Image 1 (cartoon, rainbow, N blue to C red):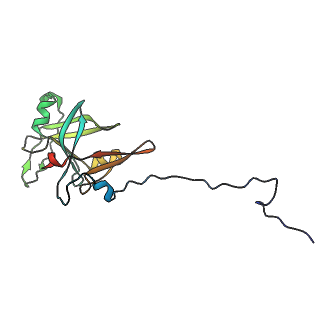
Image 2 (cartoon, one colour):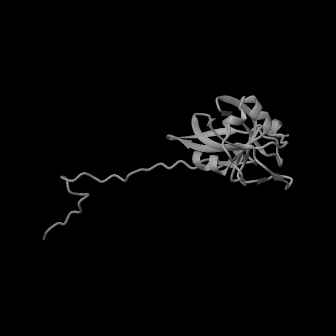
Image 3 (cartoon, rainbow, N blue to C red):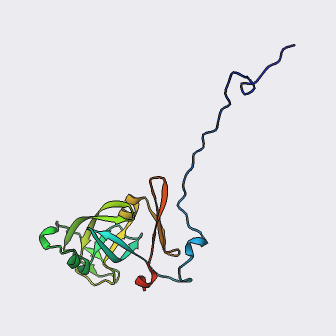
Length: 171
């Protein structure tokens, strides 16, 4: 009679270890709503570092495919018409009016420790916001956001970073 051993029982073989892979998940829970006024329908408005300056009242808009800069920010950054490159596609404003852009400019936008180059379309139109950052910025950053939770989350190295909205600025 012979005994058959499995490789795991063989004294000369080492037991195999399962590879443990930890995947961070970008998700929101009720805990993320702490500190927000609920219920609400506020836009997600944050402060970002744009062109080397801290800029308040920046709206995040997942429904838009272009980043927009309004006249107040254009002036605050001391940008001149010669800093702009031509951009001749008209935009449609929130009130469904056609807006002819003044031009386009590429600036660095920093959220916490992550810096992304963004092409802003500069318009001469009224807005309560200084700028709108949209899907291109979100996708480059790999970010997800929730207006309900008033937060943006993204991975930076092996950590989840958060950018918290400011409801009082949104109102």
